Structures are given as structure tokens and as C-alpha cells.
Length: 623
Image 1 (cartoon, helix red, strand yellow):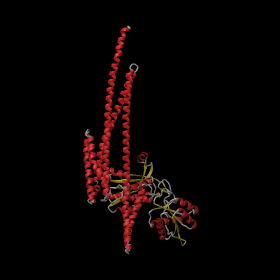
Image 2 (cartoon, one colour):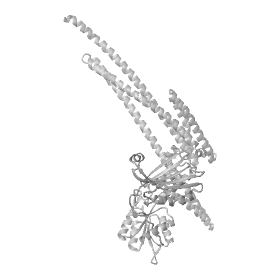
Image 3 (spheres, helix red, strand yellow):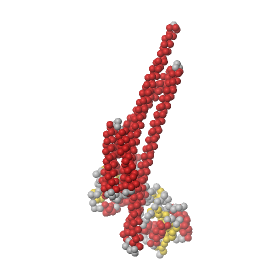
Image 4 (cartoon, helix red, strand yellow):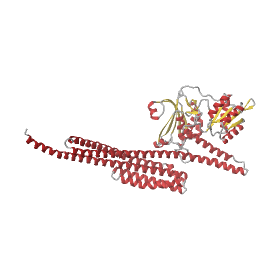
């Protein structure tokens, strides 16, 4: 081959390489620029979708807070609730306008927004009307929408409208995020192709390859910056959602404490008011004080019952489980339920044959069944039928895993009514403390939560079945008792004296007022009383007076608790019976919610009659 002829051709081919290289680089640059533009556009729409979701969350929060402080004002009449309500209420129009502006490009969301705007306006009108009635002193008019359920219906409609719009935005977010991901992949592929092309030309065109490498590094930095911004935005959103969840938890705690404070204030008003009236009448020399005493006692008993229900809800009430025959217990309650429910309610029992025994606190189980029966009665204002059914049941592994209960054999007690039933929304909140669908003053909202707490503390399971207009069934599952003797009835006899001598009780209580009441009650019952204000003082009394027949001690005391005192006392007098009294056990004599074997406990507050029965029971067993 003639080199002089081939060289110009090679030189011409080499001269065309920069042009070809340049054309290819221009094409790739155009593709990268187009992909980068499309990626930026997708990221902009992703941010837009997140902003719409955040605006919907802000509107939902404003409506929720407005409704909460509206109800706070309706219940208390305090003006500080209306100040916060007015602030939240005034923010809603601007939030609605902002959302409308943001979704102007989406026909489907515009239609949903029209529906949302209407229900929000109706909700604001309902709340404004209720507050206007309350400010005018018309309490019945203010609570009308709460009682007939229209406020709840409107709230549900608002939540549904917001949920639909958020679902639409979630679908848009998923689609746009997916598109952005594909553009990222395409951009990386284009960048990778550019890198490979540059490596191919690197041997001949070092300067051009260096320039392309710098462009590649710039593209990678921009991509890294974009990804960092997206990650930061996702973290920011997660932090905001965490704050919202924490706020909701705090609002739930506020609702619980507000409900407790409301009910306790009512009860204390009855107690303090009647005691004050007694003081005034005594100062005038009047002796007709019976009705004031009865009213004060009723308020105090209601406060004690509320405390018991709260302990049951929190699963911290001390239970005294024993073997029970559920059929016998249900049959024994038939007369009580018939008298409690009235003549318009027909009570039926369907008792299962060959029913297993269970182990539970019989008093608490009876209280749970009475609570369920009373709820059923209130759901049948025009009369109806209450059915109590017992049966053996087996909960399999699948049901146990789905319901959070251990699989195995259970005794089932079902309480069914033919009343108005519950909607799904009501059933979801039925076990919440202080939630009630009854009118103001007709219920505390602790009945079902108390039953639930007792059943869970007993190792059982509770399930609600209900349909609006079809009635409700509440099923209690208690673990089957596989062995153990049946419970025996304790002997009863007057124990205040033995062999002509008065029985002696040592009272140990660090609270002076409780100790004084307990001493006076025991003396009223005919016992000799020795008292101490601490465990150390009590042990000294035992050493000086070995004829003490019973140790009655508080559980929670400073330095040495009641259980530790009993252990020391048994070293001095091994057979000395012990009766604990407490308002909260702190696991000194209760473990896993159950009384330790052989432990006797009387919960505070107690009456003289309750103290007499418990002391008599213990001394009878010793005798």
C-alpha cells in the first residue's frame, strides 16, 4: 500500500473524529439535559403533592382542635376555650383557599374540594351555632347536635372527604415518585454512556475526555444534591408526623384527665356541699341531718366506684380469683338483673351443658355482667330482650394471633340485646375511657372499659359484635380451670369477743386521719384497738403486747411497707393473721394483678360494715 496515498485518507479520517465526537457529545448532552429537566419537573410535582397533603393535614388539625375546644366550652362554659376555638376557626377559610389554589390543575381534586368545602362550612356553622347557644345560656340548644348525633355525622363526613383527597394525593405521589425514579435511572444510564464514550476517546483526545469527566462529576454532584434534598424532605415529613402523633396522644391524655376531673368535681361538690350544710344546721342546733349525710355518703361512694373503675381500666385492681361455676353464677344473678333492668326487659339465660369451670374474681365478674346488662338496657329504651349465654369455647392460633390472646380453651359468657346496636365508628371507640353515646349526666363512659380491664387482667378476652338496628353481643372469654378444688364458703360468727375477752387488733397506718377512723370503727364494733404510725412502732407494740389477735396494716408506707412488716411480725408471732388495706398495691401483695395465695386485702375507701365483714371472716378462719 502506498503510504503517501493512505496518509491523507487517515488524516482526513482523524480530522473527522473530532466532528463525530462533538456530534455524539452534543446528542448525549441534549439527552442528559432533557432527562435532567424531566427529573426536576417530576421532583417539583412530588414536592407539590407533599405540600397538598400537608395542607390537608393542617385543615384536619384545625377542624379537630376547633371541635375539641368547642366541646370544652360547651361542657365548662369557660371563655379560654372559646379564645382558642376562635383562633382555630378563623384559620380554616385561609387553609381552604390555599388548598383550592394548590389543586386548581386537578379536576378530580377540584370536585372533591367542593364537597369538602361544603361539609366544612356546615361543620363550622354547627359549632358556631352551639357556641352561640351556650353563650346565651341555652345549654339544651348547645348540646342538641351532640345528643342527636348530627355533629358526629358532620365530623365523619369531613374526615371522609379529607381521607378521599389524601388518598388521591397519595396515588399521585406514588406515580410521580415512580416516574422520578425512572428518570433517575435513565439519567444515570446516560451519564454512564457518556463515561464509556469518553473512555473510548481518551487515548486520542485527552483534553476532550478531561472536559467530559468534569461534566460527569458535575452531573453526579447535582444528582447527589437532589437525592439529599429528597431524603431531608422525607425525614422532615416523618418528624412532622411524629409530632402530630405525639399531639394526639397528649390530647387523649387530656381527655382522660379532663373526664376524671369533671366527674370527681361533681362528686366532691355533693360531699363538700352537704357537709357544709350539716355544719350550718349543727351550728343552729338542728338535728335533722339525715338527708345531708345520705347525700354526702352517696357522693363519696360514687367517687370510690369511679376510682375502682379507673383501676379496672388500667388493669391494676387487686383481684382475688377463685374457682367458679359460671352457670351457677349466672343463675344466681337472674333475680338481681330482673330487678335492675325493670319489667320492660325480658331476661333469658341459655346455659351450656357440661360447662367447664373458670378461675376469676366472682365479685368483679358479677360487676362486669351488671355493667353489660345496664348498657343493654339503655340501648333498649322501649323494652326488649336480654340474653345471657354460656358455652365452652376454643380459640385457635390464627384467631389468637389476630386478637392478641393466647390460644386455648375458654369459658364464654355472652350478653346480647335487641337494642339499637352500634356503628363501626362507635365500636372502635367503645372501650375507650369516658367515651359514651349517652346524654350528658347519664353515664361516665367507664362501664365497658372497666369490663375490658377486668377481663384482660384475668387473662381472658373480650369481643364486641354489633350492627345498627340489630342489637349488640358482648362475649367474655375466661381461661378454663383445669384443676383445683371448688371455693368454700367461710364460716360466720361474732368474733368481737372470745372466752369473755375482747379481741385485740393492731392498726398500722401512717396517715393520721385514716388511722383515727379505723380505730374508731373497730372500737364501735367491739374490738380492743392498739395503733401505730409506722412499721418500727408496730413491732415494738407486738413485743410489749403478745395477745394481739389481728394485724391490720396499710400496704404503702415509708421505709418499710406492709408486706415487710408482716414478715417481721410473723417472726415474733408466726400464726398472727394479717389484713392489708390499701388504695393502690404497688405489687407488694399483688402480682400480675392477682392477690398472693392466703393474702387478705380490703381496698380503700371502706365502710364500717365492710371492715366488720372482713375482720369477722379472717378471725372465723383462725378460730
